[in-house]
Length: 499
Image 1 (cartoon, rainbow, N blue to C red):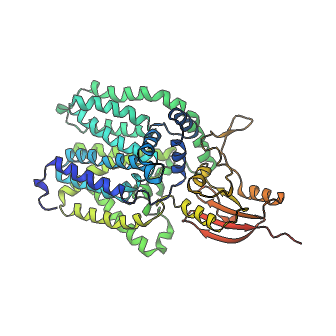
Image 2: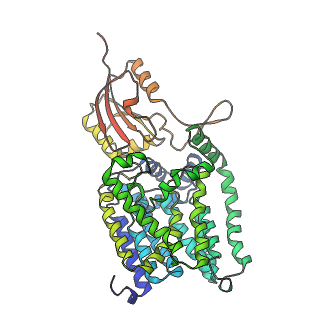
């Protein structure tokens, strides 16, 4: 951008904020809800206290993000746009701490283009357009880390502000703890003669840890149940995961997000995607890795930024995180990107252009790129073709009843096995073991068939949580099937009884 060095930082912040907000408000209501957004919508219809209790019992998330989404519906209406509005504004605001933080470690020019990257990256835009907890969590994390960094440099106002934001972050999502750890690493990036005393520094994470302990113990059972489900699903846990392609696949999505698939052999069979993947790899490695080996960063900064990059990847030891859970990687990524943009003046506009080009296919999508189940199309298809006496059966996550309720405008009879009590905790067997709320589709459909009451059934399957219809060995004859998104199928089943 010509004359960028002549623009005041305050003016840059206004410009960055406007671009970031516009990118997230554009087509904000276009994409249909995915299954977890349906859960959030269901929560917003409750009273404030009831919502906090239900969210804590039915999800592994503290309630603050849901409080923000409920407030959003009160301000903007009970629609996709309405529940997402305050999330979009919150995530858009994260461009400010990204700019300030990366500018302090590099230059104003470098920080500006690093912030532009956050404003326009398809991953960051997508994170700000979904009504869920991760975008809110990372926005608070960025603001907290920015204030903490200023606090380590001696700002009293920032010191107390970081404590307040830290408390809010803990009430938003458990992985906010990684943000606290990253802020602690940044303390050691400040030169000893310029930073506050170690005693004053360590008081912040200790205070936040003390506040978090009762929250952790209240969710300990849900953490254990999650680990059990992952183990039973055959997901590998432990150090072996760190040496698999999983961490690399997620890290390479830091700009493009779900627009790019995981690393797999079938990439070789998709020439256009392979080219896009190669361009993305060059961009990510140039912005995240090259600054460590080209003298773009001071030695102190370089040494500790490695920790900021590697520490979040420790989640793979006990979980299967996506880039949405690893968004904190944007803190070191913004700093290394800013260093790259400072060295190569053309790189900032080039990265912005790459993001703008990538936003075109993202905006055209009616579903989010990481969960491609089109509930809107599925429900509309059924209601446009079903007779009043037909039965509808929906399989998927535990919020399927809410998904049907949000998009349905008919009085069709609908059954949502395992989706009727989205805020109920997991069931417990006779030995006290927590059981996943799962109903076998074949068993359930065959029981309807054997009862002989329903001759015609419309089936909606979110294959993200349920096997595809083509793999179900059911007694019904499948007379019609539609793919409503990559992960969703609609089928018309009919009984053919022998006369």
